[in-house]
Image 1: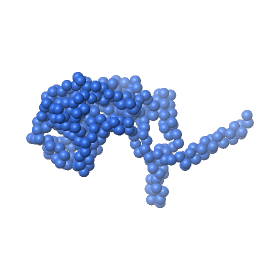
Image 2: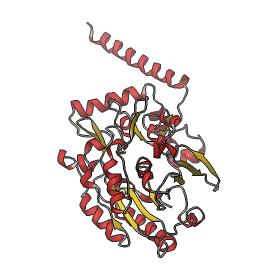
Image 3: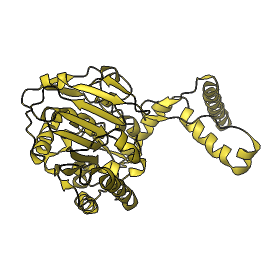
Image 4: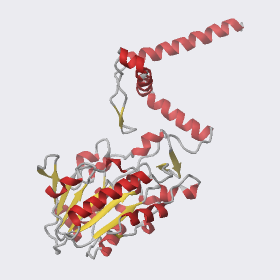
Length: 370
């Protein structure tokens, strides 16, 4: 075939492809949110002289085009498989895979962030807890990288040093060790969180260390019907197989009264396991309805008068129901969603045990703590 003809055909095909994609981009409805990546997508930037002269328009428009590109999810998947399976790169978007387990690289301690978290905890202790409560405990939940990264050749934070350093920042807390109870299968394969049905031994360890009687031998394992694609599933672009969410019930858990506080201090009754959220964008939010500032769990059948206050991140949402049988009342406080100075209006610390239960990932990125 004539070389010039080949060049013409190639040019025409290329031009038609570009024109077709441009037309699809123009007429396609723009998405606001990426379910797979769990984030808002870029909006079309405002075109004005200020944005143009500053260079913001070009930068924001490039991001907008990338986020709204036709068939974006398909291209993300192709790119992810190409760079990991063909080029041999060990991660995509800092997400790596080991035997079906996805995790995100976080290899270094951010000392400014751990210091910020320790300062917040110390402020809470000095202003609301000191001389008012029975005992103050700390347990640190290691990121999934603790059991995946180093042994499989990925950069890994020194978790032993990280935890020891943090313990030294808060010497007024008694530490409860749980690392020896965790392995890779205790976490969801596509998500950062741990599996509730796998952490009954952790609940029992915490109960033992806090001097609380707890029995978890009579629970029933229930299954969420919707497949669970965790936060790493979409970020990786690797189209992994979904997880299944199981949750535990027994008579004690079923009879607990759950009270939620809104941002204005108003209360409303809710559920321990939210069936609507189980079928929503993030099924893990079924545990205590996701991120809430204050949650109160009352056990009307408790044989104990003990109360527990848990300062927590999302890991405790699936842990707290397992502890309910050992306490008359559990209050969960999430200082990402309530200012620390306002705690006295919502939480009575008198004669309660206090547990700070936080993941290494939150402590290492703690700016959200108020």
